Amino acid sequence: MRTDLVAALDIGGTKIAGAVVDRDGTLLARARRPTPSGTEAEATMGAVAEVLDELAGETALWSRVGAVGIGSAGPVDAGTGTVSPVNIPSWRDFPLAPRVREHTRGLPVTLVGDGVAMAAAEHWKGAARGRPDALCMVVSTGVGGGLVLGGRVHAGPSGNAGHIGHISVDLDGDLCPCGGRGCVERLASGPNIARRALEHGWRPGPDGDTGAAAVAAAAREGDPVAVASFHRAARALAAGIAATATLTDIGVAVVGGGVASAGDVLFAPLRKALHEFAVLSYVRQLDVVPAQMGTDAGLIGAAAVCGLPAPGA
Ligand SMILES: [Zn+2]
Image (cartoon, rainbow, N blue to C red; front, side, top):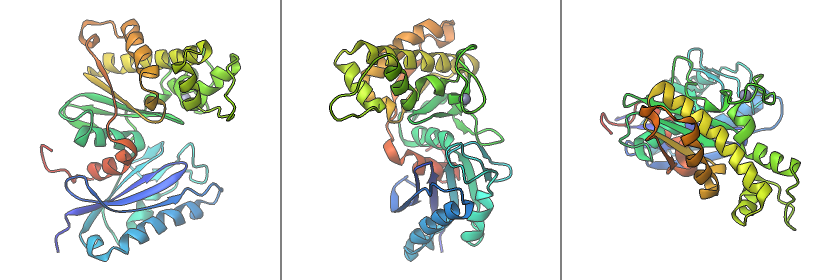
């Protein structure tokens, strides 16, 4: 029997998604469960097991699965196969990769952070395709990212490389839940964009929606506080992207996630602010482009990191 397919898992704070993926990156079967919100590690693992069992129910497909790729909210530890996701409190040093291997009767498991998986997806089939050096990032409830260097996804020994959300862009900035100070995420995530707007007097419309998408809608209509909140987030992202580009000589930054769907409300001030921070000759031409892979990026990237794509794909 050929083992030409892989199982992919995308594990986040709100959902656990799985798929059987082929060599072209097509999702042939899907399953998903909400991430249990409690503190029981086994309940969360139970949801993962249910996703795998549902996929395994597609017996003709499952018999061709030769490996499992996991992109998980981080931090992860690719060396030990454990995860301690900030937004999944029930898992601290949880042995996710060994447990998935056991549950799938010994299939090889590759574990990376969700930002790395997203970068793998964008590099394989999305906005970073054909770009040998790229930063790919997700700006959403949190801010994450991954790097493509020298034509390959660079996960690093721990599987977390490229986690741009927790580099500091403000030495005297607010404390971040990670323990750092002035992190990109503390300034640019959706909840922080909304928080800043509310603190400065922005008020939601009649529907009471105080999310970042509502702030984006207000900014599009010219609300100055909403515009200022997006500008602040854009400058934080620009500083982080410029620092990354200066260090790694990347040619493109791909930005996805819910906040990026604000479009020009974010991208226009972001591109402008890059001129402020990306000043050396070799980073001045840095492209900033929207992500293309959408909500399946985590699954397609998890499939990509376990070696499925043909060489040169
Ligand atoms: Zn932080």
